[in-house]
Amino acid sequence: MHSDEIRTIVDRLAALVSEHYVFPDVGREIADRLTKAAAEGRYDVLTDPEQLSVQVTTDLQIGNQDKHLRLKFHHGEVPDETDPVEEENYWATRAHLDAGGMARVERLPGNIGLLEIKPLLYDPSHAGAALIAAMSLLSATDALILDLRGCLGGSPDQVALVCSHLFDGEPVHLNDLVTPATGTVRQFWTSHVPGPRFGGTKPIWVLTSGSTFSGGEELTYDLQQLGRAKVVGERTGGGAHPRQGFKLHSHLEATVPLHRALNPVSGTNWEGTGITPDLEVPATDAYDIAYREAVDHVLALPATPERLPLLDEARASLVG
Image 1: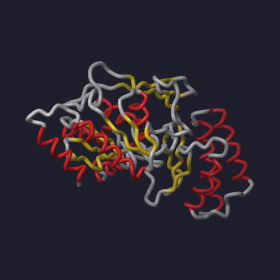
Image 2: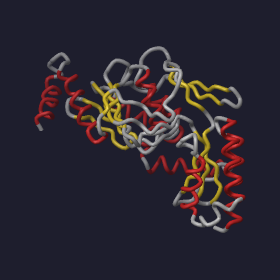
Image 3: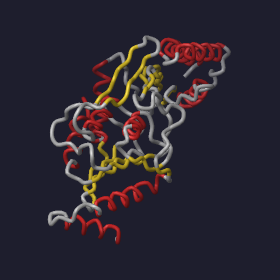
Image 4: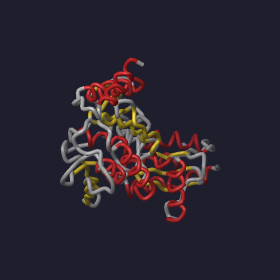
């Protein structure tokens, strides 16, 4: 990369932030700072795209610490958001190779369900079928461990689809996305799902780490605020401003937050603070603790003839 190309990238990034950033006044301040730095030649020596991404991201986040606001380096080719076919193919391929984000689906001893979602909550158009299949398999379990320790973000529509399997009855209001520049609000609610649901009464444990971020945090926060799950693990990363990607170079993507999450229960979100678990423990210990609590729940269920083998499974798992 040469200096003219670098300045073109930074100027384009500044224009995008000024136009789209979730807080318009802050966006204009950031844009002015970047434009001035580029004009002064601050970035001219950073001819490696990855080095440029690190320095510019640091400058973008001065004073706001918005982890969604980045100049992101990709080892592979960045999809072009202005080419719907290319972008669709990119995300469809990623979701396919990641099994729709359903990293682990298992019935644990004692009839306890485990669903691990990583690296992303892919959009339902690419991963809805995988999620519905996973939740259908786990619908008859007596407790659920939802492992989001490696979930780095994703689609709020997929968050709503997950939650739709975890409640009963009337639609439940989960979250709003507010666009301050226009005052528009998009609401997210639970909805009807095909096949059986896990339902709204059996216990859920959500596992988190410091890497749980964005869409993974929204799923955690929605369930926690509604009193539907117990969160076990580490405080999460603290990113509540959904972003849009813009291709600036074959390996550089501008990620600019456009919206602000607004939870209908708390009236706020987790931006900058992360989500505090109900039981704060190292992420490496979260699974064992949650599973033990889930086993205790199963052992307290009525010992019907049909359940006796499951109770024996649960007891044996603790001995092992």
